[in-house]
Image 1 (tube, rainbow, N blue to C red):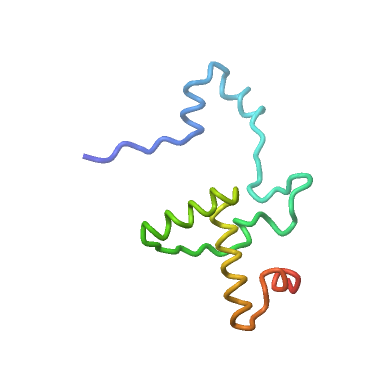
Image 2: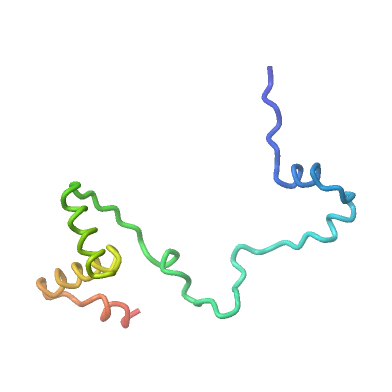
Length: 103
């Protein structure tokens, strides 16, 4: 027994649409995934530029970090960046701001 064909979004929309298919195709505008939006950062978003790093923390460590972030009304990400800056300073390396300026 063969598998049923996979449905595409276009076929689902075409089946649900009361507009005839020939009129519908004239209204569809293709969007490029890399199209620049007005006012967009030419370097891209932080998520596009940055590398992701996972950190595994014991629950009490995570809870304490979350409590500090809440008390200081900031995000854990900002506290992690502050911690990295302190580590870089202790090791005599460039700070995050200096590294960003060199880019």
